[in-house]
Amino acid sequence: MPAGVGRPGLPQGRHLCWLLCAFTLRLCQAEAPVREEKLSVSTSNLPCWLVEEFVVAEECAPCSNFQAKTTPECGSTGYVEKITCSSSKRSEFKSCRSALMEQHLFWKFEGTVIGVGLVFACLVIVRQRQLDRKALEKVRKQIESI
Image 1 (cartoon, rainbow, N blue to C red):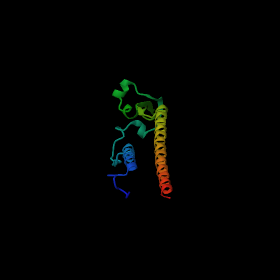
Image 2 (cartoon, one colour):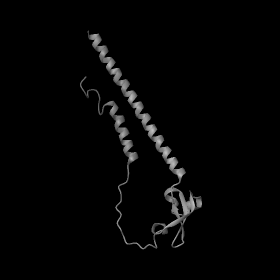
Image 3 (cartoon, one colour):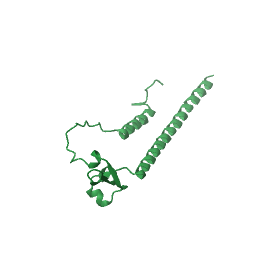
Image 4 (cartoon, rainbow, N blue to C red):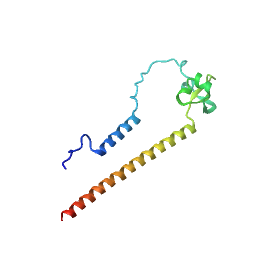
């Protein structure tokens, strides 16, 4: 049978390939980096930990419900640490990443990698079986024609 006859559109295996490619691109889609312009900003508007040395007064901990609503630093990671700036002696909250959160993210990543690996291993097995069947069918036809 000539290629493409009886099969509208893409060959059977390519639909899945395009679907997986689209899904992967969707997962990996990142926003374009925003160009930041350097503006002269007074240091009084900046948090003290950006412009001077600081000491961690309280270690990184999850935000309480009250802190999550009132402290903007809780918004990005859900964890904050209390710091004291050396020169100005101001106490402020600083967003941080906890070891527990990093561990959860690591295991999510590992699970995703294993899952994707298993999916592709299954696809390889299915494709190998299809090719084996086609080869066996060709051999059978050659034997019958003798």
